Image (cartoon, rainbow, N blue to C red; front, side, top):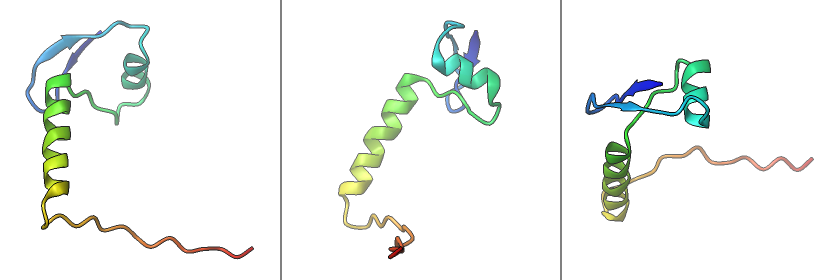
Length: 66
């Protein structure tokens, strides 16, 4: 299966039997990102988390007593 990275437009080949290929075939909302782009985003996200200006806005979890 030929796939194209959504960020760098690099075309790669995936084996048809892999889980990632199956997800891309069956669920069109899933997109493919090459390992280089994925690693670059992971590193930059970790750098942003370490900075003091990073705020993660999450809704507070409500505790159900029942």
